[in-house]
Image (cartoon, rainbow, N blue to C red; front, side, top):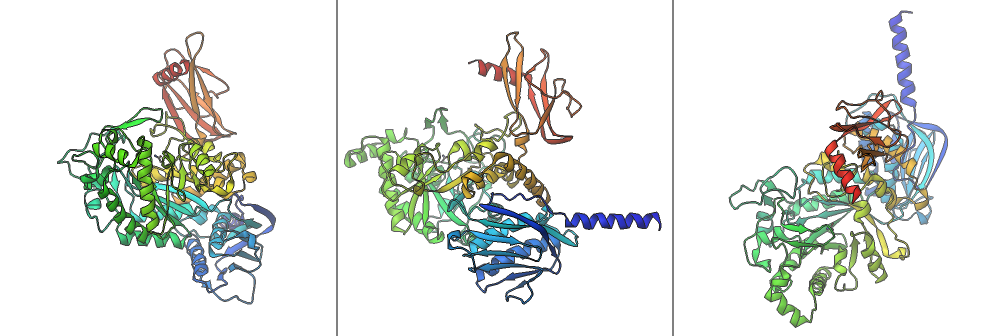
Length: 640
Ligand code: ACM
């Protein structure tokens, strides 16, 4: 035999062996129960996909599965609706047969055996989640957007029984600070459902843009959706001038919203609309200045500074961005807004914001002083509470329940309102104790707009939430009646997020972590196991060409002054099993450079410290560079 043909045969063997290898099992979020079985199922061009029910929702779930596998495998697997006589080489989606009622509406059973794969559930949503777990059992190349030639795709034999811990598994997407198109929102939905999220909270209005068409109030989008385009560090830009072209922005028409609602519903996702009032309303008052308690001309904020944040939770407005709680015109305006919002979104709740409303202009307003006298309101909290209660009545009159950020508790909250706790867990505890439904989204754990690693390398945001904090998110605080906690969600504010690539970077892997907090049983969570799974999902993201943050590999750097007046530098790992190598000579270190074993003494004349991370012989994450000046700053802060 010629050498060439030997080579061809051995590479064919390698190819077919490779094709039959099963991927490590790495399902996120961790299922309730997963038993490994012997053997594997080979998905081939001959595998049938069966939707064993005429129910259109079941047909749709099967077709989602078929289209994903078609895209990656190139197999033209068609969906068959009738149960064929032969039970081999088939993937079937079966509704309502032989599954315990306790699995509820979102639970599922997934059995992968060498002969067949069966997903069973009481409800199509359960089949959809079973399908997501099934896709995660395929080799990572199943995430490919183009066909990969393989004879077969091997799946490990397993039996999974699974159901969510919470019914509210949310991600909030701020489409106001930066606008994301309808198709980008659909992509966001596609990404979130892979991790079994079922609620998309759309933050539709804020100072920087009004993003939903209100037909009876056209200026909201004619004026409120547009602003000058600025790039750099949001919050520090120059204030927009009267003649600056307003080229940046956008909004969703009624048609767009209906399309998004349907797209989400097809994937078992509810959309919670948020109209953020009475603060965060600069875009609304730019369109209708008569809604402001402070007469003047307003412009949609373009990322300029107009609030003074004192760093201790207190703040005041430099420009009034509020609605006037003493104006009847404001309530009839909001009635119009909520009439259309309620018609567009079938979900049972409407979020009215209520957060961070500056009161300093309210304190100056004669109309508000008169309102306080008339209604016997003793302070600004009670004024806001008066506003919130009236808004609650409007929202209820549209057949919806009102939800708001935890500030709506201040000054007293009407019964029936639900609270989203963001300033830690205090508001959530208080609201639950007072009998209000609560969704937990504490900024300490699930604010995924914040930095996720050392500020020396992360795009700057004012604070940090590490992956481990997100993983430690526990939606039911100690001492709280779990029945009052509807679930949890992570929030993606977009002041510093200009595009979808960075949106992905900020969301993943922290939203992997939060998915385990809201889906998996508490006692199934395991940080080290989670990290091993995250690494598998990073590989899947590489195949899918989606972006994610590698920050978990990179060191957290602290510095202090040693007794001999040198700077002592400590590198802290976020995960186990990584080594750091460093340089102080400006060159880029690799694994032949000194390995970090304990606190470093910075050479007196060093200009930079550079650190690279290795797992074994493989570099992981990014090289972090920090200047000597910054290290000294950190050492000085440490001294205080
Ligand atoms: C918020 O983060 N202001 C709800």
